Image (cartoon, rainbow, N blue to C red; front, side):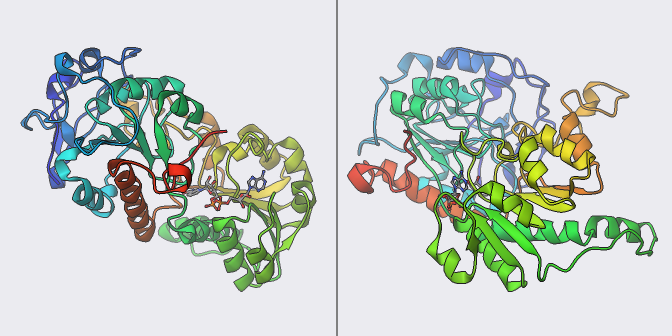
Length: 437
Ligand code: NAD
């Protein structure tokens, strides 16, 4: 992939010179601690105040962008799908190195490499100006698409948000509707990836694989303290029997578990495979040795696992959350672990993961020489993750080659609808459009 855009000029005032060239043309530059605050959305002020970013777009010798308009010739904002005379210009936020081989080639082949801007930074009101000149953005789970950010994007002429994930709980759909910004997502890309990760976490915790491996690395081959339990014959509770919940249930049934489930809608497929539904979460929790969460984060499910819920869980049971961090009240979880009400927890998601997960925060102690703690170290997560009975991964359940490929393909299909002049779904909606209430 080649670099398309030079932000060298706009970053010159705030950015140290790029200090390392990565393979494949991606450029890394050091990042200042805090992005400058900006409420303005004009292109000129965006250039003046844009935050630092790590992006291959930082190449100092890259040609000036052909997709960043100068302030004076900023076009009148168009609305709705693209017209035949318009070209789709896409700003991809929160890009990661793993996208280089799995997703970027698919997206660049479909849209043309010169029409795609890869940005390592996440979307915030401060980074939104980096989408100047684009009519579409591609976002990931922790990108911040609240009303302020949507206004900033819409003021730049962005009319389409292609989420490259299933969840959209950080997108203000009302703001999108108000500003005429359509939002699509990838409703399914590989439920197996997430279900298999949930099972991997369950087994790793149960059989104490982290502790066992660490011992062997240090030449300690003793088995004391590593007793697990057979999964066979245990009762596992699934909250949310959608695509991922059903996949998880299927694997568990294959291991000889009894699977109980709660969902606001019961699935015939789940019942046919042997899942037994209960009527409430309260009924489910006391009956299970393991509870695995697979429902979306909504107003109804926020802090589904609170003090009262942990009180209902069986003593010595396990909680697994690969769905969304906000389902679990982190403080209540810590209390349940302290009281040994539950034995252990596996979490691929964390209530306050935005701004932490997907980032390497390990080098930030350089900001305070001599300190071993980064200024924005998350004490709750740190203290949870340091417990031997807690297993944390940083939102990586989706991360399989198959899932990434499927995400890229569906994202391109969604973008093609926008570029093709409108949605092919019901009533002219985009097939994978997310519409607010
Ligand atoms: P899905 O829409 O197929 O299934 C969600 C299920 O939850 C549905 O059956 C729905 O009826 C049920 N549900 C809704 N509200 C509920 C409630 N109050 N109580 C119980 N059940 C309720 O979604 P999916 O593809 O199975 O994904 C499930 C969740 O997994 C997503 O919402 C997302 O948050 C999460 N996810 C995580 C990752 C990751 O990498 N960790 C990746 C993809 C999805």
